[in-house]
Length: 243
Ligand code: ZN
Image (cartoon, rainbow, N blue to C red; front, side, top):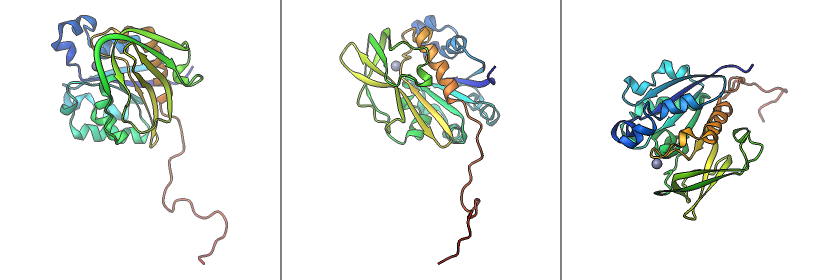
């Protein structure tokens, strides 16, 4: 049996409290729906914006292998101190999964270094996600494509650095396409951006979406490795003289 992966699901948790329709879809919040839907040897906790230190104390982060993030309307309310803390943990090896509108979260933008802007349109159109990296661990068990009947559209151009791998590419009813599942390495950390998850639709109850996020948790979990060595910490292995 594989080792337990410690997962923290962070949600700004605003739309569920302010919009009745969203509350109906996710009575306990999207973070709880995701927590209930993930499958794997996971030890899951949740954290929200309103909590002390947004629920992301040094201790919580030190005990998190993979952090999942959902934010939209309150990106600016996330304190820079916590953003720096999360980004530093990613560079040390914590996995980070940014969902949907978290493309504009301070943490994701800091880790990408670009505007992370994109096209969007919300008319509840069909989204078809194609696997564009078959054999990738995040696509394990996923059919060549799957569909979400109603979603918000995100379209190219998506202003991110070229991903290390694009596991999913979306087509939308209105004709747009989008790099929907993007892998990045930053320092010792792995980052996965996954597009679906507009708050008005039951996306986090979709079996394919939950499978992809579960796979992404396993992929992003830290691997055991030698501590990195820099500077003069590895002396010359053969005799060498200054010339
Ligand atoms: Zn949205």
